Every structure is written in structure tokens, then in C-alpha cells.
Length: 356
Image 1 (cartoon, one colour):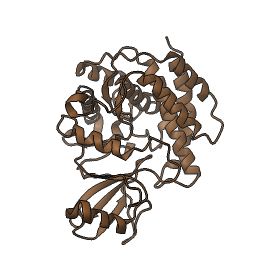
Image 2 (tube, helix red, strand yellow):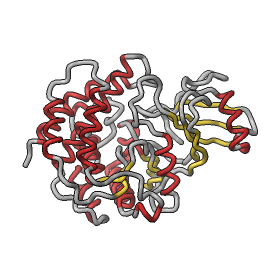
Image 3 (cartoon, helix red, strand yellow):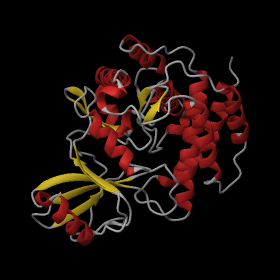
């Protein structure tokens, strides 16, 4: 992956979270073509949940994904889930990295992991990256992002072997319960308003007329590998929360990143939202939804509940990252400001949840 935030390691150093000797033995048995030379690894900075490494195996470069260190929430970092969905989507119009190997044995490197092909492109995450694009290319990149999401939501799960990938019935109500449970396991400080937001969402969860589509679960610009000249999306990354459900959940969360964080001063210098949204010179969230609606058969309808869910979900994710950071269990930079995003997310989510 061509990411300007790849950490430079001392010659011979091994990043935390890997055991290269045991990994080499495993590859020699299961993918011997990747064990032809000495293994070297670099942590790819930027991911705030699962850990991603650039692995050099002789003359070949592949990417390894594993769960975060330390405080890991149950079901939140399922390597097999990621591996299955990118394998299934490979023959579709949705760009994904090629899946190479899944290992569910935690004894190899300390946690389950999988390998995928390295895909060329850039993760657009910061203003330093997106400002030089100019208005025309920023607009084109945003539209390409929405076209890719529309392509995902038009894939028939049964046709790609994912008919049992989730339970669409009651998906939205389960989302509220799931993230409420994750919140309870990540609480380390007082969070005013977050319980009210949880309760409002639980009491007003819609049926989800669009249920049954493949949902990414954390779709946003910096979960894509893209290029700016020409503008194109080369791969969708970070499938750890993918399932079958209501595609409006993807749209609501995207608008949370785009308009709630990307349109406010909260985003300034923040590694999660600094380069996103209208504040960074991109089109508005309304423009994104118009583009999506023109290329999808999904009824976008009123999105306020889904934006409120997006705010709650992202607040819980940020709180979990903040908690791991306070325990010294994060790798890379930028984690010290993640916790600052929780309060404004809760406030906006409450406003959206109160809409009728």
C-alpha cells in the first residue's frame, strides 16, 4: 500500500504484534512461495483499530492484518470475516485486495491474521494530502467513493456466496444493542448524554426496508486506496464490521464522518476526520447522497436516525480507542486526540435522534 504514513523502522527491527520467525515457519508450510527469502515488516500507520503491516517476503510485498493489541472487544476484530468478504467480492465490480491466506491459530503470531495482496494507491487521510488535489479532483474522488459504495450495495449476497453472512431481520435494533454492549466494555470515564442517545435509538429503531444488502460497516474515504491522477478507487479496505443489513447504516455513518466531523472544527488536525468533508473542500453530504441515489436502487429516505446511529457507533469506537490508548495499547501516532471526538458526536447524535 502506498501510504505516506508508513512507519520507518530501524534496520532489522520487528514491529509489535508480529513474530516473524513463527510466521515464516507457517508460510513455509501453507504458502511456500512467500517464504523464499527473509521476512521484513513495517507497521502501516493510520489504522485505529485492526493493525496492518506491509510484509516483505523476499522480492514480494503483501499485507498482513491482525487484531489490535490488548483490550479487544468480542466479535469486533474478526479476521475470518474480513477474509471471507474480500474473497467473495473479488469477481464483482467492488475493488478489493486479493485474499491470500487466513490463519485462525493465535499461536503463530499471537492472534488470528490474514494476508492479502498489496494494492497500489494512496489512503487520503489528511489535509496535507487532499488540499493539493484542488476542487475538481476532490469532487471526482468523492463521487468515485459514492459510486463504489453503490456498487457494493447492488451486489446480490447469494450470488457471491454470502447469503448466510448476517441476519438482516432486526439488523438495526441489533446494531444498537451491539454498540451499547461495546460501550459498556469500554467505559473508563463519564460520558454525558451517551446513555440517552442509546436509549432513543433503541426505542425508535426502524424496520429497515432495504435490509439484506452487503454492508461495509465503516465506509469512508480513508478506508479506500485511491489515486488522484487519474481519479480512481483501487480497493476498499477494513472489512472487519461487514455483514448483511441495511445499507442506510453505511450512508448514515459516512455522513457522520463527512458532515458531523468533516464539517466542524473538531476535525482540525484530527487523524480520523481532518482530510474529510466540506471543511476540507469536498462536496457536501447532500451531494454525496444525490450521487449515490442516482446509481443505486436503495431508497435513501430520511437519514436522520441512521446519522444518529452513526454518531453513537463512532462515539463508541472512539471511546474504545481512547481506552486502549490510556492503557498504552495503541501503536502509532494521533491516538491522543481520538477521545476528544466523543462529546461532539454524542451531541450531534442526540440532535439527529430527536428529529421526526
